[in-house]
Image (cartoon, rainbow, N blue to C red; front, side):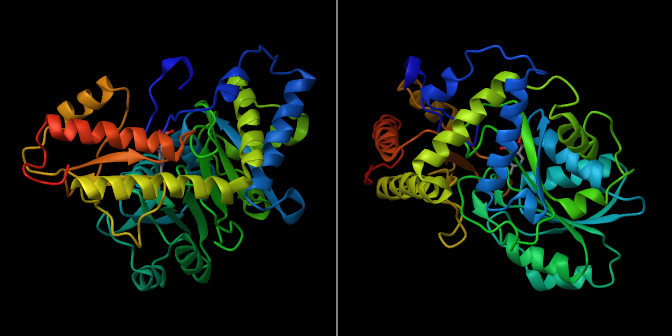
Length: 372
Ligand SMILES: Cc1ncc(COP(=O)(O)O)c(C=O)c1O
């Protein structure tokens, strides 16, 4: 790794390429022509990555802050008075969407299922029938566990009910192949420091223009007003308030590198290779994953603690001492830790991590008499 930094097997911020980091070694004025062009190219690049375009009625709107700010921007900007959201939840990020909606005093109900299960689309259909809902939200890859949710099926249910549909694709966009238009999303959010492999500093919303134009007058905040941000970007090409100039420089470079790698399909293939290698190696040592293989994505994997007295902090510290960063668990119903597969990481990095995990497993005697 560059500068001896430890590889980050986390859901973000992620390990980035040296060239993405180098792209930040400039000071660009936020009102400068070069910077305005950079923003335009990034917005077009995002639409291109999503397989849509402005001429097909789509808009990409960057918003300062971490990914949650972009989520709050969408929720607080698109909800009409008297609206009611249905939030489909199987993890912490679905819960966060609900929390944001409720914090704004907006009516909402949730359909919850276990963190390693898919929601039941028939139950969503019946909740939507006659429930007075106007908006539906869900999470694409629920990073809590690593499960991939059926966003197209949920989108079809939202469309049948005439609801506006919002998808939090924070950890999936750019690293997972999917058809944005076909999944019926009106608004989809991700951020700079996930699968595009930029650095933290902004999130972005991909929006159907018709849905965007319908939100005039709904914004509940000044700084996170999505429509005002779009109008400013369209009018003079600029953010309304100080943009994260260095992050945007890095992001433009990251988009170029994603294209050179072969686009989303090639990136998804690399993440799949990281994931498959990791899973095979972890299973061979005796670890078990939390999500069933047919529901699991290639973004991040949750592994169950190998025993009730497993000391995660010691495991983490020992791995850290050997130069690797993993992630604690987040699921509520099982003790887990997580290994991320995204970022500027390759199967050989996963191999190196597995070697370190094997050493630590032996040092901690995690599988007495077992295969580790
Ligand atoms: C699915 C999902 N939603 C929301 C977030 C929150 O993003 P941030 O921490 O950038 O605010 C994350 C972060 O990992 C995420 O994975």
